[in-house]
Image (tube, rainbow, N blue to C red; front, side, top):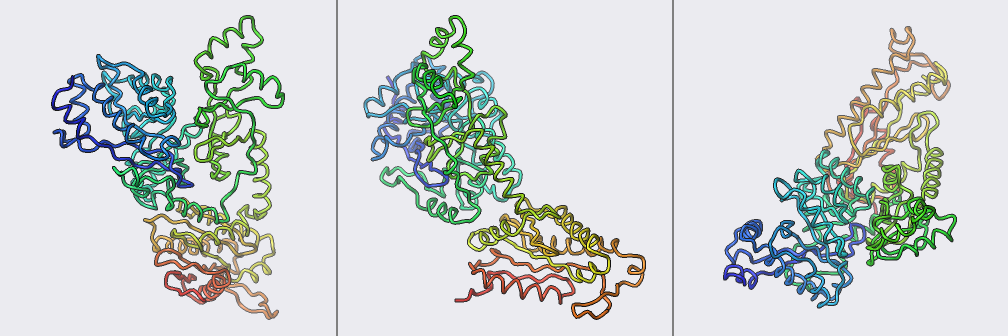
Length: 590
């Protein structure tokens, strides 16, 4: 029997739902239930509510009542059976004297739903002192019943990595602390990138929490998060009719990304094979591997088609060929195939090839990468296919590299420029062209000319201070730099680096001149008309275009080339050897 205080809480409590969506497509994957109206029952915070319930040993009963209200409201969503409900679970409920398992299954039966429709979130809040280790107990208890499990607030506590290592959750929710202004913090990007890389290698989905701006969303997507939650998608709503099956703001951004030339479609590489469910009989696995001689593993899925891992033929053959081995194998798999399942890397079908190759390389024991679309299994990339992709990529890259400098060539440069003209990000492009290179090359010979070119290539590689930068060699004495800039990057910083490159080359190239040339400050060589004249020391000029510092305009290729042509002429006439323009102040031609 509940006291009046707790009965009031149950009577007035409500839940708001916040969408969790696929970061590529905007398709709704789940909603998180967030408790509301607890203040009316006299509690200042949610933590105060559950701490009080714990101290009064009513935590389990209160949680069950709230859980029932959340599931009932979730059932009012017209598409509830095709998505998941994320429910925050206090891991201390197992310490309550009245705790028992199985009640949630009864609730789900009542509303015609499966255990796979529910994901329980565990936080790092109670992982210290006498509560340490409770998380693993709770995770295992609910996972055995078929529920999905998530680690909430990941990264802000002391035991997150230990929870990840021990508990093997289905999801990791990266805390808002790391997501806020992530596009402006190299340190946050490093932390989040590491979390994502570890999670992907373990086959765990990552969810970026508290995404409030397009810049945060774009950075989380670039780093490889699977899903996103936050005000940028939608604020929590108590009205179930405000929850949508698709969020067009992300779908529109995704369609924009697909038009970019650098986006890679992996669908043509995806292979399919027979898959088994986690509760399938081991005989199904055995028969498949016995008949398919060229296939050395079988994917394992949950009943909602989420990939969980693989079973390798090497993992079960030791049992098959030993005395009593088959009986032991049957014993081990009575409760499902988890005991003989191995981890496997996982990627989304929209992920670029480079990201998938990193997942594959992260774990030496990866036999394949399982591929999903909207978190559902669609196929896999085998080790053989991945090696073929690497080989193809190396061949394409090698063909595009300049043989003298090893820098990327025109194909990649053109892709960068095309992308820069349609993106909503701050981008800067600089074309570098040597001054007086031909007379230098004629006077000292092509070998010294090649050395001057490689000198400049080395200066570019060693001077750039930006994380996202493309260094290209157009050909001859023409070079390209392209920056995808962060919000905090300024035009002054870009200009300063270009100026530093020019000054460095102007100083270092002097060592290539003979003593006579150094003393006189010039060399005597033929001009383009064949007339002998004085030529001063070689320098380099830069034509710089900024897009995004003002109000960027999308320009066609012809207009862009005309702008670059004008800038190059201006740079060669300038004492600074630099000529710049911001496209935000240029009106595009009609």
